[in-house]
Image (cartoon, rainbow, N blue to C red; front, side, top):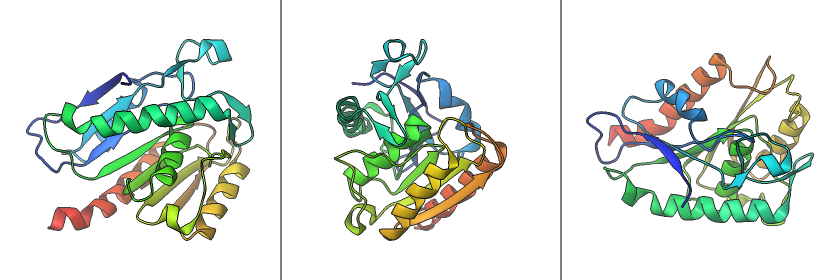
Length: 218
């Protein structure tokens, strides 16, 4: 079981939206907890920690989801192992929460965004909404982009036009593949590097609230 931090709002109720936000390369489970104020007040937030120490791969003292080979290519076996660990984590998470969660919003920054998009494609229809902050669409033998794989999932992809770590050109390539498969994709570009901006957070918040609205109205 992956280690994780969580935020449960006071008065949390069954059916509350569940945000699961994996961190980026070389970071840790507490990194994306800072996004909590931007989420709907009723939302549950869980931030899992990657299973691999980053130091052996040169990523600093934090943790990593996979070894990066360059371009949009993760090392196949470490990526596959982290996908297995993430799937196990998500399957067991509801019983560890104090309330029964509602819709799942899976998303993360950099490697966390890569993992989130790949998980949705590997588990068609399992994730209603995916948020990718500055990640890429993984070139991996298990990750296929087909109409069957994208059905039932809404994707948000935000990316910096001056990103030195994951070039914006990779975002355009990945977005093109998703659109070709018929994905429900909202893509936004921002005048920034490899980061998350207040403007992007505002766009994500509005997009998530729009996606939650049908459920809230029932």
